[in-house]
Structures are given as structure tokens and as C-alpha cells.
Length: 131
Image (cartoon, rainbow, N blue to C red; front, side):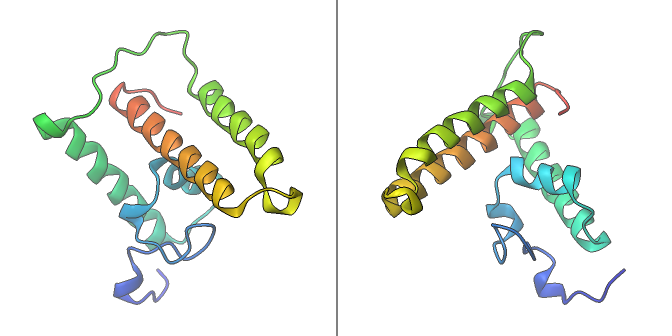
């Protein structure tokens, strides 16, 4: 295990969420880090604890449980993510500051896409669907 200072255990050390607390990072991004990267042992464990905390909270805190979804068998989580990504790409082409668009509009697009991915991840987790 690497010598990581204890105050940094719950912050993302890299990527677009670098420096943010794990509890402020969308679930979809945390799942992506586990799936697509090889994080150090301390980060892998911290992300798994955070994901478990969020899942546990939604399963057992009655009134705060947001989703009770019976997911149709024909709904593919990968396809729903592709739809969100395709929409984000299309809007980005029109609104990206490097393409003559507006920075604030681009920030709103990014925030909306993160929000959608986060809530889709929670829905799939509550329905017991593994991605």
C-alpha cells in the first residue's frame, strides 16, 4: 500500500474530478475509474467504500430511497450511457468555446450529462443491474 496522507484518502487524485471529495463525484465516474483504470489500492478501496455507502443508504433509508425501478429486460445500461454521450457530443459541437460557443453553456452541458449519468447509475444499481 502506498503512503498516502490520511486527509487525501477521500479525494480524487487525478482526472477531471481531481481534488474533489469522493462523495461529490458522480457514481458513474467512480465506476468508470474502477472499470477502466488500475487505481492504487487505497483509492480502489476508498471508491468501493463510497459506492457501497451510497448503495446502502438508498436501500435502507426508506424515505430517502429515490428509485424503485423494475427495469425492463430490453433496456441495456451501455446503450443508455451511449445515448447520454451522443447527446452531450452533439451539444458540445454547437456550444464548445473552441468552436465559437459559450463557456457557461458548455459547463451546463457537462453538469447535465454528469447528473444524468449519476442518476442512471443509481437507477441501475437499485434495479440490481451490473454494468
